Length: 362
Image (cartoon, rainbow, N blue to C red; front, side, top):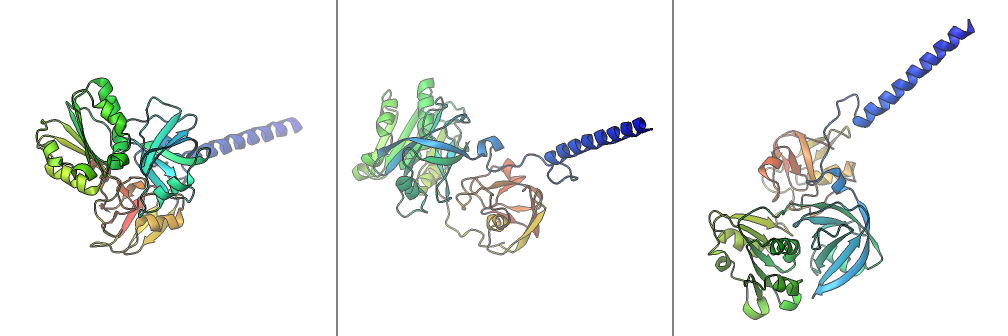
């Protein structure tokens, strides 16, 4: 009698153990089980692997121009990157700022960034210049690339000041490949223009590089530089907003324009203006619903519930806060997303809802 009873106990215990294991696997696939598992969430434009925070050691700090500091950041297992990519630096204060990678993509053990000190900026560059020294660790996310080098029969680059940082790896790659390219490089003075010596060497063959220092020759002639550009040419522009506007206005027909912004094109207040009524946002993964007040950003409302949500510029041009939208009509107010991306995602720092409700994949 005891043996059959023992056999029953063993069978029941084994079944219970298998059930618990299966349940754990099911919950791991979907934190909101028994709801169906949702697709992988997004932040910015990259996979989770690229947006994970990692700590890198500052192994080099060099002043590469007046007011411009270059940092070498080393660490194991770094994700690869391509020319035009940028890195998010999580500064000691908690501020997150984007800096273009200006080193060599083949250097797989380190990232290199450079930043100019902006005395009247939002504080990020001052923190980099005053606090980030050799021997310290800094948290980073990325890299991500929204300014990639595309295939084209020829290239023209219009750059101002620190805007040379995402372009420099492009120039190296094009020079090595023998492609056709030209560069108009402007700055306040030659001493303030980073990487000037290397760039002039890259363009020594064929007079490819035109350098215009404002204290010597005034502002660069963007319209003149683009006047004879052949159809099909890819035009890349990075620098102050007036330079970007000039390149946009002077772009010849049949050419493509690629812009990389370090600041918003307009200075309107986030969440203000026409159509800024209150609405609510459901955070599907978290099982919460948060109200968004008129004049309040979705980012601010969401971070009150989920403080870990990544963000940086709060002006709609960096892409750090991009999130997938599962339901609702989006009122896009950003400077960045493509038409395809706008179909199912938004930058929650500036964009809003057309209607009373949005559902985010958060």
